[in-house]
Image (tube, rainbow, N blue to C red; front, side, top):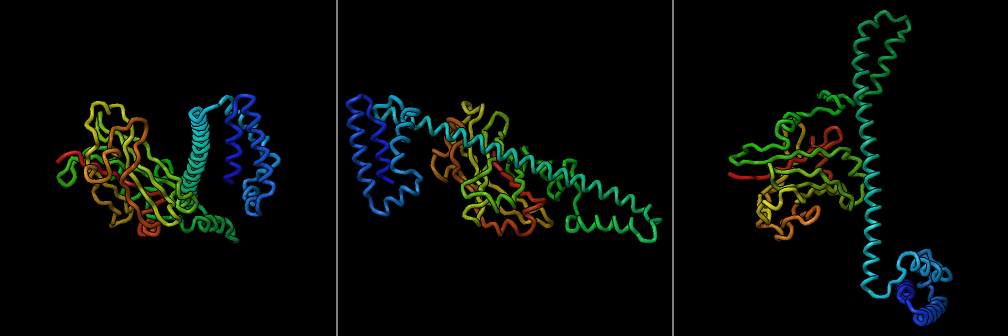
Length: 333
């Protein structure tokens, strides 16, 4: 593998005819050595799916198409940086497409639940007039069959207009989401983030795949923050992080960021026992680099809460295939 990479670099650098001729001679010499390589080296080339006779043509094509005219390391680095940006941009487009598809599937699922609920209500109303069914009882059997299909779906919660199941904490969420209020003697800001399809994410997402919340301001003309969740770290853990992102009012704020904060994962049963992080103090955790004024986009997250997926599956932390994460930022006493 190392020889194959070196071969490409030697090919890309020459620019003058004399240099190109010398480079080609060196390449031919190296190809000859590769042909007599050990079995392990040949196996490495096979793993790369690049045969030795085709290597020269592939590298030359790449040089002409992407790195034509590059004669020094600086230019080479700039070209590779540009290529890296193109790859990242294309990956982001693909990721957005996947997220869009997941959102569409989730919306369809919610709509099906909504229509299913309406169908059950209609069936319940029709049951009152079904007593006159024929002696075979076909009408009653038809309704009973539909009930069997929905077995296990009933809960002691109603449905919102969008098909979401209402939990005991929704009143709290509706009242305090994105608001400032008093809590235990502090003036605080709270933000609630509902992460849907959590079971699928915990089962199927890769360890490096994460979901970012929307950005939000913690007070008027204030700091802008976000949260991020990694649902499937090492196939068994969940990690939730908090970070700063670029805002419109950063020039008028004090830096580095110093406001204490913590997160809850809501237990949506009754009585509730939330999963709660400790209070994070930016003046004591990490370095000022994490809490500096964001220059472009998001700062790297410094603090976060991690726990086993088994814990999240206990009690009622998962409700209607969703979890709710609450961020509390302590503004002043």
